[in-house]
Length: 380
Image 1 (cartoon, one colour):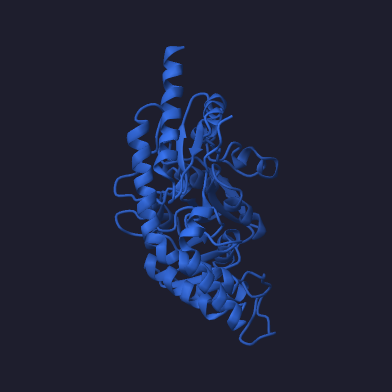
Image 2 (cartoon, rainbow, N blue to C red; image 1 turned 45 degrees about the vertical axis):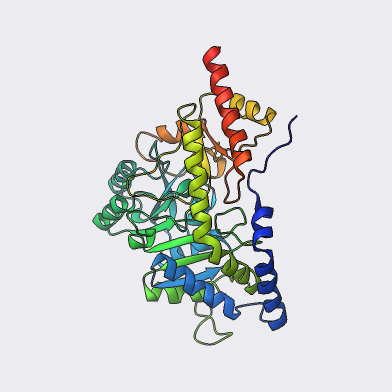
């Protein structure tokens, strides 16, 4: 078998930034301020500034980044929280932690993000049943493109609901030049290493508008701490980003804008080279994308993946089993009419190698393999 090209090449980025990373890590080691050092506060300020958000708070991981605003907004028992089923588990698993109920919503067939019409139907269903209060929407910016936040915000306002943007894959993306925090009450970030802005471990952050929510998050993330240390105002959790990860992220943040440009160039090269051989991703009008993944659609996914693997091209599938089809989530409500788009795309999507340092020759191998696959199928 031909040697595999990297799917995500973290080593290339590390080597490119190595001297700056070593210096940043050394500074933390010399300081001894391993928890809540000054780099954490600097990172919070820069993250908020880049997205034009009033407040930024770093936390231990991207999952905590979602549950912290839920807790701080008072979401709890008897509340319905609307979330897509076509997403990673973290987007929905945090809802039962608060004793609220996730309600699964379908996605748009082009962007794979939450479908506002399915959301409307799900809200009306919940209101008609009268058992739960529509309280919050968690919209997921899948594969690096923002959800339709203008439409979702309008729906939330009509029903007095909060809106959280799960931007784990899409921090840095925009819609009409604006970050998701323009519409959302909170924007959540994951710094998992494979994300476009990743650290070297786990890490996350929350951007919020409301100062009261910010203050509550600061309390919840440090064991429910009150006005003084060892005085507790509420039951909390331990969710702090350590200083080493913050220092690493500050170095990566310096290179982030350039890397987003490189990712877009790689996406453009895929679009041009692949053409109509398979269904390629499309951006909504006015949208930019972080290209956390470059995801195509094919009829025979297993055959497609095997064909590419024989030619040294790795692929990945996100997410083959929708959450509402998984045993722990099977009893939670689903939007009226089911989730037909979710059930279709979960069998068809496949992601190609994508990162800021992808080499032209590697990308051409991907393109050539896809064109060869399409030609073989056409001749069959």
